[in-house]
Amino acid sequence: MKLIRLLTPVLFCAVLASAQSNSMLPENSITKVSDHVWAILGFPNVIIVGGTSATLVIDTGLGAKNGAIVMRQVEKVAKNPKLFLATTHFHPEHAGGEQAFPPNTIILRNAVQQREMEQHGMEMIDMFRGFSAQNKELLEGVKFRQPDVVFDADCKLDLGGGVTARLLFTGGGHTEGDLLTFVEPDRTLISGDLVEKNQMPAIFGAASSMTRWLASLDKLAALNARYVAPDHGDLGDGTLVAKQKAFMTELRDRAIEGKRQGKTVEDTAAAMLAAMTPKYPGYNLNANNMTNVAKKVWSEN
Ligand SMILES: [Zn+2]
Ligand SMILES: [Zn+2]
Image 1 (cartoon, protein in one colour):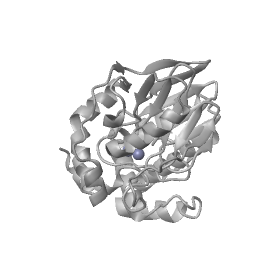
Image 2: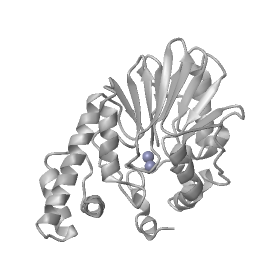
Image 3: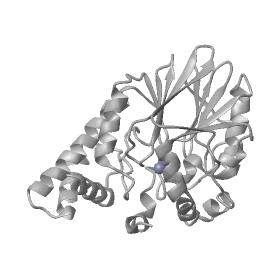
């Protein structure tokens, strides 16, 4: 176990811990994202993609109780019982509700995420159980399921009626194995934790990388998405990809500037915070997350 993971337990996902006080997804609440895509907005946002012959669910909610809430919504919109499940990354609110899905669900994961889950999945479950009494109960007895399909970088699903979902591994950033999904003909990108609306990116520990994250954003920009459905926070349009890139590029460049000027990491973070807070209202910038970003950038540049 890497020490840095122990030192930064509250930084895992952008809205976790301080802002997030309820780990239950809402019942009977579904929002249309685009013609063939719906979202259950909560912790996290769970996405449902529907074709005429199959349905794809992306992420599970935290524990089997939340997975069951997702399944009740899936049953309302699905045109066919054939069901695929993909997870954006191995963190417990994204993948820890798999047990509630029917046994014949076809579970897909990219190889890097699968390896990361095997190496660190239960360690994360234990950590999340310590966040609250509710989490402790929701994650009781959770075990990750074995995937039915493991792919390297790209997996295209035909969901019927002209609807396709491209599952993409672009090199990660938030974790090592982040999975993105691009739905056609909607041009909807399900962006996991890599693209969010007006939020400080959750960079933490050894698994995150500013360099890989920025490289992933370049690949996502090439998709030319019309809609973006992030895993945390508000839904948005295709402009979120470029906004995320601009924001993170500024973070990186300011961190490098501080290093070149011979400042301490704390002084660099303070200068970043002072310069960027007025420019990015609502991003929840603070000394803690800025220091974290500066340390990460310094380690990579
Ligand atoms: Zn997350
Ligand atoms: Zn996460």
